[in-house]
Length: 310
Image 1 (cartoon, rainbow, N blue to C red):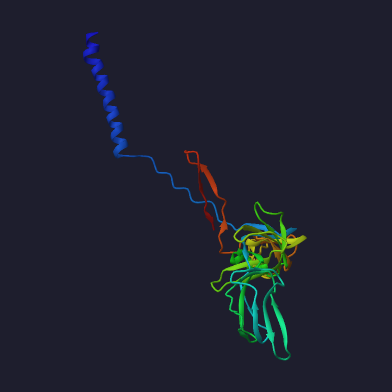
Image 2 (image 1 turned 120 degrees about the horizontal axis):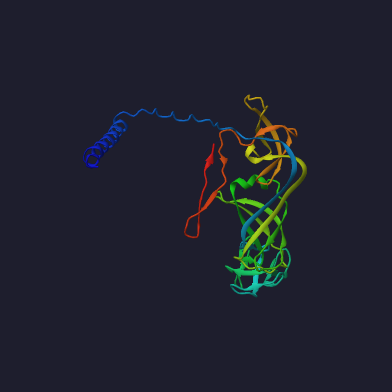
């Protein structure tokens, strides 16, 4: 037993420690494993191809705007004569047909005439006094009409959708009257390039300048028409170009098409494609949109990110 503890056990312990030391030296200075080759990328970027199909398009445009009062304009004299009476003062609110001035005329014959307000509104910049001689074309006053209109801003890319806009739109005022029709719809572009849509508020509607309003325009509707995504078309206002895929791996055919109405997402194809044709979903060279992905941020909110697929 004494021999075991003093001789055998220490020898075994030295052998085990020596084996461990040798193994560590081999691992550190003489690695025998061959590193695995990095995997080669196996994926390839492809352009999505979609079939041309039939569907319906409702072209509606909803714009945010506000109620505004019509512009003040000058009223000029249409007769020669001498003012014998002034019946209104600066800032007066007048009704349509209300007498504003009385004028005595000598030619072509002697007579007394009343000059009346052409419409309801407010008088400003009054330039008439009793005893004044009037001449045709002279400024008498300015009138701020008791008329209102809706003015809504348009994004530049929406202007082509308004080329054949209807003459009537629907106005909705939050907390106001029931939605009503406004007429005389027209697109106007300011000197700074800002585009807007304007229409007249009916006289019987009670509105106030500055109220926010939504302007809805029904620009057209088609049923059972050939439709494709607007992302597939280069162009879009009446004519455009699409890329037709033959399905055999060859380069797509660039083809001209004639277009109808669109709703901002899909566009009607009037000529140039047939039902069942395969086309590229995106114009070559343009980025395809990627859906936004959202994740919990750990603090009760969300973290969202989006990318671009080319």
